[in-house]
Length: 114
Image (cartoon, rainbow, N blue to C red; front, side, top):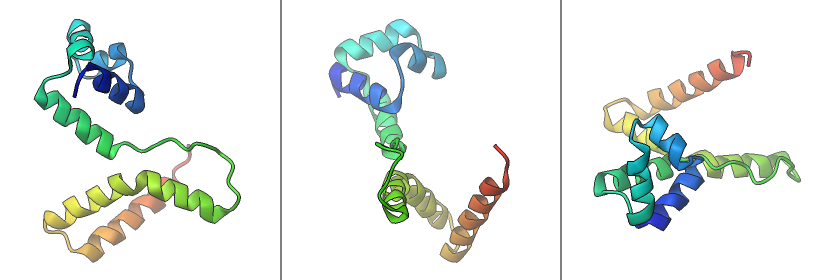
């Protein structure tokens, strides 16, 4: 990952160089250097993981049908939810228990008032 790719990744994730430095407690000058010459390998791996888990914002708030809205949201969330499911199963939790737990968490989230 070169500097341009690092800047593009920050932008996709919604960070400025300053906000990234602040959130991850890295000196701003260090982040500026990464934006110029590219980050070290461990930061590249971290950014890559963040990009894989990133949920895209909707391109629109208007869909022709509910099924289109569900399909768009499903595409945006799939990598994160699937990764969480696989991690739980690999840790030894039965698939059915993981699925039921995810449903319970969604119900709890919907029950909370914003």
